[in-house]
Image (cartoon, rainbow, N blue to C red; front, top):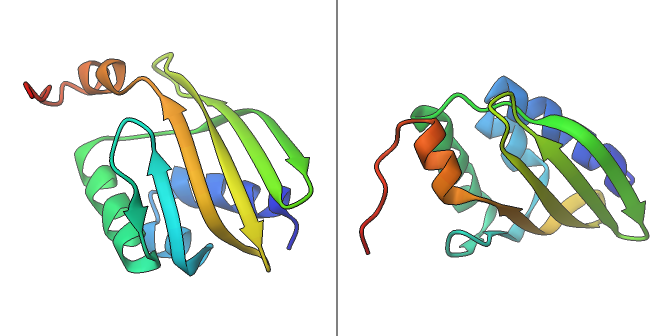
Length: 119
């Protein structure tokens, strides 16, 4: 599966809040690094991260652009509350091997009335 198609499936599963389907898009040893947080390593840990995040906030990814270049896809997104971000996906053999996301964590926490860490 091409990187763009993987990211399209990622968005569909994300918008359903389906952590199990999301995890199946990742390689067993994948890394998901949302730069506002420490990297998450391994498919099972990534699944647990998504489960935790979906339990905390109602999130929707509205695609603005998806670009593909070789083994990489880039997702530019927004959400209904006005937050914007982008994600870079390295896809090998039809699975996400590495993902890095950029977004404003402080704005996200405030928008969803979640606690803001003091450290």
